Image (cartoon, rainbow, N blue to C red; front, side, top):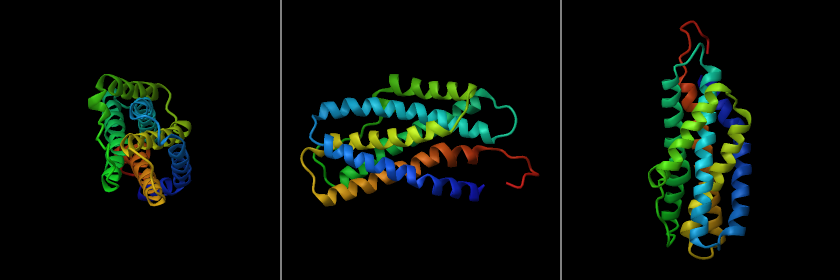
Length: 203
């Protein structure tokens, strides 16, 4: 199991680097947009991230766990793996970066509380869809991009002016950190740790 997790983390580094680079490009293009606009974009990307995260998390669990699965088990795994980790990725880690860079408009946005009527139903929709047709290919790649962009627009809401090159490097680091470990934890590590293998398994 440990070797499988390390393998998956290593293989997803390129996806995350691509996502972080697209985030930096978007930041150059969008850093001066109004705060209200970046707020609206964040609340478009973050819910979609939650949807794909729930789908990918439940899919990974179903594809690796033997036998049939109780639906409430899938709900627990999918909700905790999507809402909990997407909040860490899109909201908490970006806010730490904003605080370290002393951004003037920084504010912690907790989507599952601020927009509970939007975020929570999409998490359950992702769980429901994965229950019937689990797959992990496109959902994870889309999840990585959406997470990167959601994290970015959380940061853009806080900028309040132009940034120097040191700030850009710092933001790139936080974008990578905000996506790689949380998204891989959500889509790979968490569901695999929840898998109950038979006692005679060599995994």
